Length: 248
Image 1: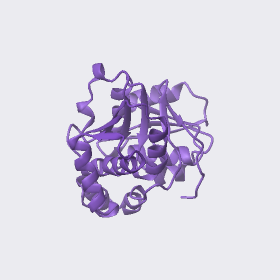
Image 2: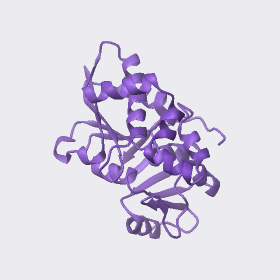
Image 3: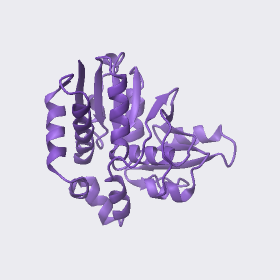
Image 4: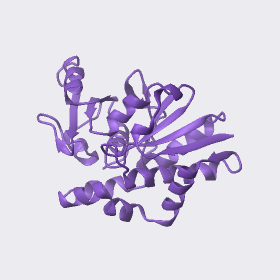
């Protein structure tokens, strides 16, 4: 029987307990939403970096013109970087390119999860594809749905995204999954509330709306727009299964 648990923030990850587990990193506004979108639109890979300096070092080893450097720190775009939200990154052009990507929380979470047996990127945008793959490959292991959070704080939108995935998984594995209380709470939140309403009312969502990023928030609130499952292998996020290419 598969076990599903939701961690409320990336700081709850315990590296020593990760071997043998599957981790799904969730950062709805915006890291994993952006990663899913970039790969769905033809990016060859996404290299998650823990900070701006690390991202620059990765980019320095790539051929000129082969990559897009995108990132933020504390919600401010890093100097010389592309704004790291889904639609902004698409405007920069990602097809056939490596995206070197640094964010305050989401890309840090991938680093913290790297000792797990498998590490996947989850968002509202790829919920069904991810749930299908997890259900298909389930061998009774523990799956940790990790909300990236924000500077050691709980983020409502990530918890809602985790609830969407739990709801989908519960419907695909009836009688064959065990939910922790946190996973059940996330599912109950999701099943009773609208995505855009929750994202817009969350702290990060309100901040983004105040900065005129309403289109980005609405974009990230879409459910199962893409059929891509990004997986972290050797420090690189690539498409686990072929995805349907769609226009922004």
